[in-house]
Amino acid sequence: MIGVPGNIMVMWTIYRKLKTISATVLLIGNLALADFLILLSLPIWIYSFVVNKWIFGMFFCKVLVYVIYSNLYASVFLITLLSIERFLAVFRPFYLQRWNKQGVFKKITIFIWIVATIVGIHSLPFYNPNQRREPFQCIPHEYTSDTQKVIFLLLETLIGFLIPFGIIIICYTYLWIKLQKMTFVSKCKSDKIIVLVVVTFVICMTPWEIFKIVEIISIFLDICSLKAIVNIGGDICGALVFINSSMNPVLYFYYAIKLKRPTTIKRLNMLFENIGDIETEKQSENNGNTTVPTHIDSIPTADINIQMA
Image (cartoon, rainbow, N blue to C red):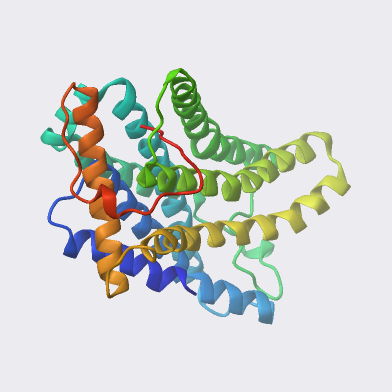
């Protein structure tokens, strides 16, 4: 359960300790909030899995499923916005600088949470009295027909995977092409952290979405073996979703531990300050200035040299 205290520490550092919050750090903080809310329900799911029974009632089942799905959508949208922000930092630095001053990313973040809470409503479980299972289990959906199930799965895959991940791939493809044309690539720790956060999210979430597609195929072709694979794989991929929510604090702590500060909070504080300083410095470089970040020398060099912005 490192994810819950880890995400709490990340949010505490960003919102209570930092004097200024850059767009990148703002998105990291909101991502930590979404991960924290997802992980809060993990002990309940583990207990229900072990005893093979749901004892917390229908209402609590609906609430937990809704919280997980809405925060998963928020995570997907925030990761997508983080990729767009990295893209703008390289290709449209003037827009990014102006949007930061106008608080555009704060407004977009609020909009993302509103959309996620609305979109998450479709995931509320619904049951007919004669379809309840014994022992009773909290299942995300019991559909009234295969057509209804396919429609919901297609919408989930389109909104929560195909469109956002398509945007992420486009952004980082252009950034990679830009890197190949550069004669000098700086050792930027903040960019490496962001790339690892995005890559970890993609690795953990892709199997979940692939099994949704396999489930759609199994319904159309009516293949029992595929349905059995989906039932087994769905549980494993669901575990990956919870693992992903715990991974980001681990990544932050890994880099923060190398910083010369007496406590973990102060190290995290310095790490996120560095990210904000480097982001400002890069925008200045793209604008033709020569601003040097305050803390960049305090970040240890990495074994991988990468600059995504």
